[in-house]
Length: 151
Image (tube, rainbow, N blue to C red; front, side, top):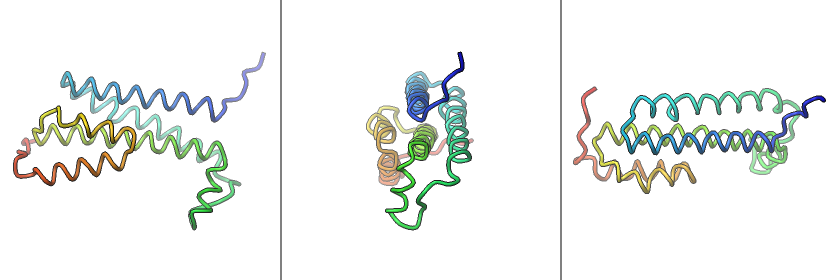
């Protein structure tokens, strides 16, 4: 019996599960100070897998799609395609996890207590740019009390 073709909905679930596992791993690496796992797992490997998936979806489904980037209406037309909507979702998953890991590394380098990440990382997970904004505001406001660790 032939295998049915992969659907955008099935890949949505796979990509979302992979990203969620990256966030769980990131949380554990912060709690247990597993720097190498943090940097290689959620900091590199999982975002690269998601980026590869994104690139493959774009390479296959971009050509012939309606819409573009000239107006909000054109972007809306792009996202009428389930495959390009999935590409947009995977884009968010990859970048949000990458940024979350960067925030965790930056907090450690600045010797920020780990508990301060509690409000920031969930915000980065759910609303990426808002988490990044909160982190930049926090590290800017308290910069004099942070001490950069020598590399």
